[in-house]
Length: 101
Image 1 (spheres, rainbow, N blue to C red):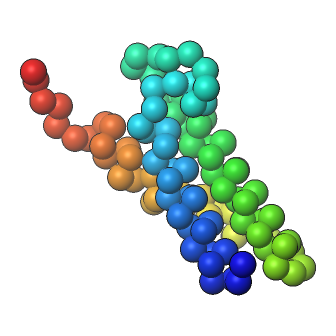
Image 2 (image 1 turned 120 degrees about the vertical axis):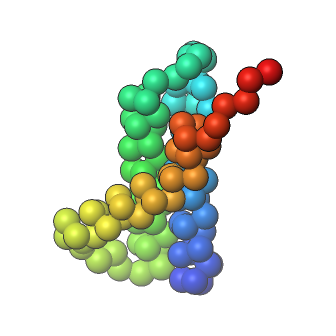
């Protein structure tokens, strides 16, 4: 896999992972179903998905060559990007107008 494909793969996985907590009512996707699942659970799942996405990026970077050490700026920018990618799921879950049946 070339570097361009690896970058797009990480971005696609991050997009799906950032929105996944807002579309599932199960705790960490395997646990019991909570109705409604609280914002705290969703934020915990979001943090776990962010760590998994960063881990995938590290694995792909190490596979392509030598991993470069990162400073706090990298992680701050990555967190902001991940939260930006999670915005559509947040809007769908909390800000859309509920229709009454």
